[in-house]
Image 1: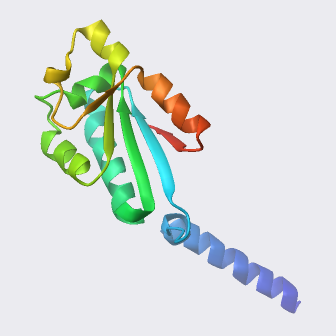
Image 2 (image 1 turned 120 degrees about the vertical axis):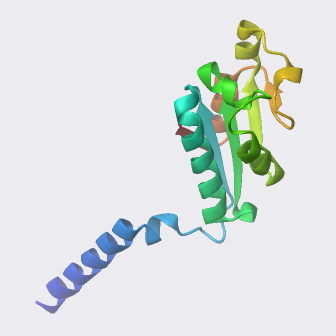
Image 3 (image 1 turned 90 degrees about the vertical axis):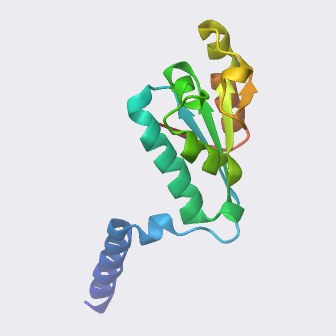
Length: 143
């Protein structure tokens, strides 16, 4: 009876921790997290993309996570010089978030490096970059 009561208490505590996010949001103090976000959708998703990237870095701490944002397809527009997300993009880059534009999408849409927001880097292919990061053990998140 006591064991059953303890098990119920432990299960309830776990459910409460997960529901409040405290267990899920706690940073592992030993592990350096590595996350690659892929954005290949249009302007409606850009704000959400920046929210996710910035919140993850803030929650885990800059020193505890490496974050890359890879934009290809319709997501490339967020990285152009005239982006609506310019101030937040600048803040992300300043805070050490690496932002990549897909070279293949740039070629297909006739976008050059001078058309990109300052600090944005170019990779040969956005999907290739994501694949390489996953093969290296990075966590992949699609926006």
